[in-house]
Length: 409
Image 1: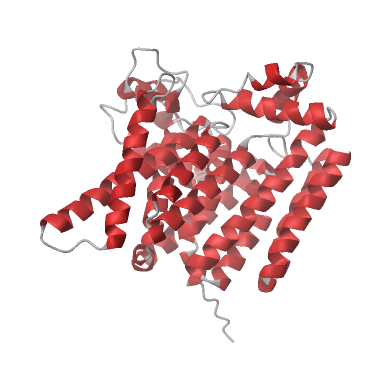
Image 2: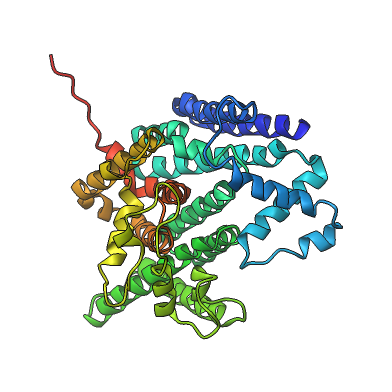
């Protein structure tokens, strides 16, 4: 109980610190904490069972409790970059050893992670789009149901989201300054996120793709006779250093791009095998599964399956997917993402003018691809895409920057 009180107090303290610095956002920031704290206790008291608080969260809690008796060195030796579930269970066991083995103790730490994540999103959106967009972004995180769900139960979504948004923040500063240390800092944060969920490796892939694309652009400009600025040269050098680092990382034992598809290919598998394996299930999983024509097939000979998977990942459930009253909650996610992407399309000229957002879009694309090809269930898709909703808000807040509400008589 002491640890729960500590986490609640620390969450409010973080929100207060940012509220003192940015007083115009005090109410939204405090609301973001209060909604999470309130839902946390509502879930723990059994008034309402948050989706995911059943089997999924209980599995991590029971695994963590089974590790509590291990000596500290033996416990920490279980940490493995390729096993996100084990790493999260080690975190839970560490909390239990230090503060007591109660389920709410493990979940309470997510309140702090969530508050820090909201604060980082607020600052980034403020720097890019201004006060109005930043306040609306915080209000979305304060009341968006699926963001709230992730932050009050013992699941690894929130800690990976925190490292992910910190990585995105480092990318924004790299794109603005050209300092290579920001680029490596971002890779470190993304790899830490991947240590809790391997799908976050997609962020590194997206960042590497952007680095290669931007470097090619600068080289073409130089070859055309145009003078390369100091900033562009700094970007070029840091991108080459980063790409070299990624190449070295992938050459090390235990690291492979196939880790993104862990459990679906053997030692001799390749990317084609990995993608095919993701589409080999006979039927979609769960009561909110994708339609059968999306969940299986051959993505090599039927390449349209991949964009269909991405479309369902981002915008489902559609009306024809609703099978129960509980599924209606998913329409909030569907309508919200459709609105954001429609606004991005309408205001694309404004987005592309902000050069620091282009690498963020590459990162979001990498994450979307990795998670989309591996999911066949709408509920799971909503949980996964909520993990990197904060990254979407960095460039998607163009919707709120340009949002105008007219009242007619």
